[in-house]
Length: 202
Image (cartoon, rainbow, N blue to C red; front, side, top):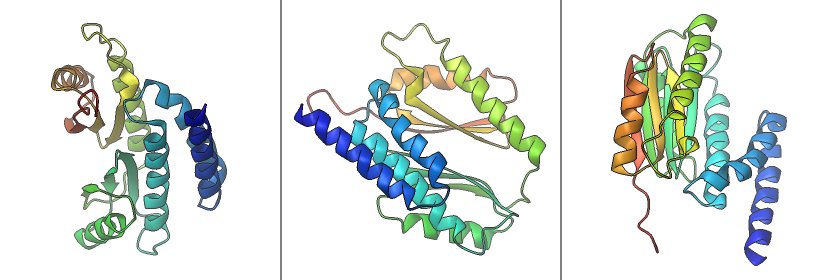
């Protein structure tokens, strides 16, 4: 009962914080939805919520800057304090700035700056990336030879056909997830940012 109350308080706190940030309405829904996803996650409910808040804070810190306007596309994801930046930011100077801004956000334990010095891709490429992420997620649901494996433990982000995988997986799970991802048509490259699960009892 005490644990449930603590989790509820964290949800309420997350909702309050999200309501103070940009695009609050959609983010509140995402923050609350995180609690249901945590049922299948190896992270605690609190960590799932913290990661969602961290993702929002990093995005907010970046897009408050005049340097990151309509000519850039930056995708942000977070897992256990690890933050991924992917997309296009026109030039190396702004790539470095994005990394600096993101790394200064409290809660960022490790930053993976995968931004490319390219013009922002158009709607067609953006839609293709979203569809590719959907198909990768779909391919992971067809993994049958891993007892206890849950595909929702893998976070998929795609930019220009490059698929980034985040999550807390065993080496065996990681190997099979990578193999399945590479079979999806349209995947140009797979980048893995996996963490090992904590040993039982820790």
